[in-house]
Every structure is written in C-alpha cells, then in structure tokens.
Length: 497
Image (cartoon, rainbow, N blue to C red; front, top):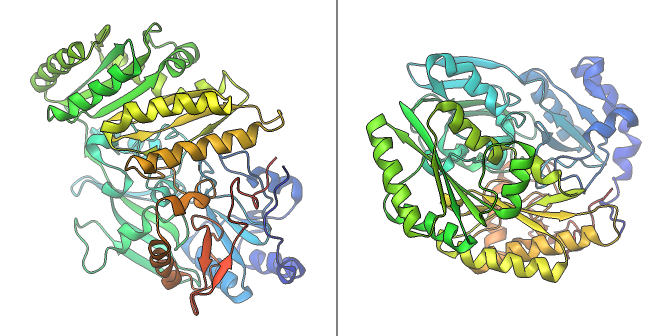
C-alpha cells in the first residue's frame, strides 16, 4: 500500500527558497541542508517503515539561533519538527514535507558537572551514555539507561520520557532531571526548574517530559547524577516455561525486593542474543530473568540468596550469580544488544512498547503467541519485567507484499490487549505516529480534548511537530475538528518505503 502524508502547503513550497535564504541568515551556510541527496539522511527515524523528506533541515549550534529559527517559523507560518539522534521507535521525529526539521545534534556539550549538588547541565544532543562517561571517574553515573544509550540523546530521552533496564529502582527520565531550558514556538526562551530539588507553582518541567516535541524545543537539561552503589551483582534465572519466569518476577516484587534491574527474555530472544553476543545464556530455557541487586556487599550477598530461593520455588532450572564486575556486564551485554540481535534473525522487525500490570504478564505473553499464529509472523519478547514494560519484536519482511500491514495489525492487537488488561499504550517509546490512531482505545474524547488544550496553550497554531500523538486535532479557537489523517489503521497518511 502506498501511503502519503498530507500534501505540503503550496504557499510553503512556493516560499521554500525564501525560507532557506532566511535560515542561512541565521545559521552558517553548511548548517542548512536543502539538497535532496543530503535530506535523505533525515527522511526517517528508527521506525524505518515510514519515510518522508523534510522541506529543509536546520542544524543550530546556539540557543539564540534556535530562538531565531522558531521566531522565523512563526513569522512564515512554517511547521517545525525537533529531532535529536533520530533513535525514536515511534516515528516521533518523522519529518514533514512542509516543515523545518530542527536537528539538535550540534548541541553536544556537557556544560557543567556539580558534584556537590549531584547534578550536571548538558545540552540536548549529548548521548545518554556520555553523561555517565563524563562523571564515572568520580564514581558517579546517570541512572536511566535505554538499550540505545550509546546513541540516543538526552533531549530525546526527555521528549519520550525514556527508561531503561535500571528504571525499576531508579526511575524514568522524569525522575532523574532537575531542570530544563526550552524554546517556545515564536522564540521565547524559558527556564524550568534548576539545581534545586523542588520547583514552585505548576510542574511545567513534568509537562515537558514525555511531550514528544509538541510543546517546545529543549535546549538544555539538568540531570541528577548518582553515586555508584558499593556492590552490584547479577543473577541469571532460567525457567522451563514463560509462565514460570513471569511468576518469579511477580514473586520477587511481592517479597518487597526492588532490584536495580529485573528483565525477562523468551527463548527466541535468548538464543538470538547469545548468538549475537556470546554471554553464557542458558539456551535450553523457555524464559530467562536477569536480576541485578545492588547496595552494600553484605546486603547484596543476602539478597542473592533470597532471590535464588524464590526462583527455585518458581521452578527455576538454571541459576547463576555473577562473581565479578566483568561477568555482571556480560550478563547485561546480551540484553542490551537484544534489538540488533533479533535484527540478525529476520530482515526487519517492528519494536513495540506497551506497559501492563505485572500480574498480567502471563496472560499477555500467551495472547501474543496466539496473535503470532493469527498474523503469521514471529515475535520475540525482551522487556522490563519489573515494571511491566513490554517490548515485543515483531519479525517481518518489508520486501514481502502484505508483511508491513500484518506487522502493523499485529502490533495494534498487542497494544489493544495491553490497554484491555489495565495497561497503557506506551511505557517509554512515546506515541508518535505509530500509536496515535490507537489513542481512542485508551482515552475518551474528553480526555483527548483536555490534553489538546495543553498543546494549544503552548502552540495554538499546531505548528510544532504536528501529526503526532493525536488522531485528530481540535482547533484551539473554536474546537472544531481538523482531521490530520483518515483516522483508520494502518496509518494511511504516513509514507512507507
């Protein structure tokens, strides 16, 4: 099926040359990309099944430049799509054919590290892992650690409220930032929060976190940094069934134990990960739980024994504790590389993201296997079991007619099941374009209109990252419906490759 975005507005295309000229008055010549061959590098993000050439790409280097670009966009009535490292798995930074793609990759500096206040000021283009690297010599680190942490940017992490394998104990991005600097549509620069622990008045920083680029452009982030725990050890727990693994996860939490990380993989993911990155996973198990315990040495040793006993009670056939830091990292290497590992066993995959109550793990995993048979596509499961954040990886072949549609339908069925059992459409990847047509399965019209009123307060003309999150948009003035697309699956207005 050939899918197309709404056609670029004729007035914008007619003024493209003037827009580019004005952008080059703000930015160095090479920081404005307008040639088709160079624009191809920005036509998609990590949700590669959808592609669209941007009207133009702007690469600012300073906050005043961002401010001027946003003021220019307002003056010329041009849409703007903010983009970090382009690792979004929900199409959150998919460009628009009639909009500026504001690429923040040149904002890549750690501006200040304040160990006394346990925080760091960083620009939004700094890679997640680079923050920990910048402070590790002092025994500190930044806790949220998405699998893409070597590449994903902190600005994008804020936009999507990213998590990671250690978010169960240490929280998502929203729990680990103290301040933001943002630029509104129109060019106003706003400071939110700071080094202090609590902010006064409305929690606008919390509102910005997870807003997916619909409210403002992030130009600086103040993050919390934590001291590394005295000891951290990992446990590999193998089980003969998926139910056993899921039950073990629930039993650990029910015991009042909050591990640093508590992850789960099914057999397909176990074998793929171990083939891709030899890490000693038990290949004869149907499910694998990776549990990390941290704290003082005596506390960790005690918890290793307790969790091992819980696992035995849940039918574990394989239990191995790490005996060194190298071995602990080896345990995590397979999990951290699970996504590329699954990519090695199929031409393409669609990485889903939904969150459910932990007690529903078995039901939802069984449901996915039934859906796999229904849609005729394989699925591998790798997920943050401790907080119920699922990441099913649906394998398909984009070159095989009908496979993309099957993958989309399979993914939609998974997310509907997540909502049905009391969960939510996304845990950390965001809604973007991938889940926007499913928002009605979770929210009423009143819910959605209330959320859109927040967007109207920041962006009344709907020029900042439009076409994302909301299946329909209400005009801010009269609340008449303005359809962004056909409102039906599978996403009829999004261009595929």
